[in-house]
Amino acid sequence: MLLDAIVLAGGRSSRLSGEPKAQLLWHGATLLQNTVGASLQVGARRVVVVGPDAPDAPGRDARVRFTREDPPFGGPAAAIGAGMRALDEQQSPAADVVLVLACDMPEVARAVSALAESLPLAGSDGVLLLDFSGMRQPFAAVYGRPALADAVAGLRASGTLDGASMRALISSLDLRELTDTAGSTRDVDTWADAADFGIVNAEHTPSTDEQRSRT
Image (cartoon, rainbow, N blue to C red; front, side, top):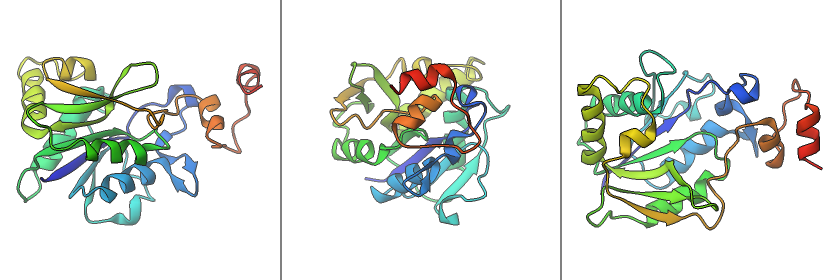
C-alpha cells in the first residue's frame, strides 16, 4: 500500500501572538520536523507541507516538498487541495492513502502509528482519531486518496473550496473512527498549551490568565 502525507503548517497562530506553531521547539526539534519525521517513519513516500518554506525544513529531505494554498490562509480545505495538487505533480504512481496531519501536535508520532496500524481501510474512505472528549480530529487521519481527491474536486467545481472547513470537505466520506486513548492528538493553540508540553519562548511574557491556568 502506497502512503503519502500532507502536513498543514500555514495557519496564522493568532493565539500565539503570530508565533508560527511549526517552528516551536519540543525535545530539540521543531513541531514541523517532528510531524514530518513521524510521517516518514511509518513509510510515507512523499510529504507535502502546506505552509511557508521553513529555513530548517526537515533535513531538506528529497521526499519533502513545500507548497501554499492560493491565496494563503484560504482555510483547511484549500490547504488540502494545494497539498493534493502538489502530490499529483510529482512523477510517481498515485498513493493509495494520504495521511493528513496538523503540525501542532507534539506527540503526533503515537497518533501516526495508530493510524498506520489501522490500515488497510477495508472499504471505508478513511480513518480518523477521536480525542479524549470524543471529538473528531480530521487533521489526525488517513484518507483513501481517490475519496479525498473527489471531495476536493467537488468543492473546487462548486467554487467553494477557498474558505471551506475540513468538516465540509469530508462530510460525504465514510470514515471509521479510532479513539485516541494515548492523548496523542493534544495540540498547541495557546501559550498555556505550549507550557503544558514544556515548550517555552524566551520572548513571550505569560499573561495573568496564562499564569493562572498553570497553577
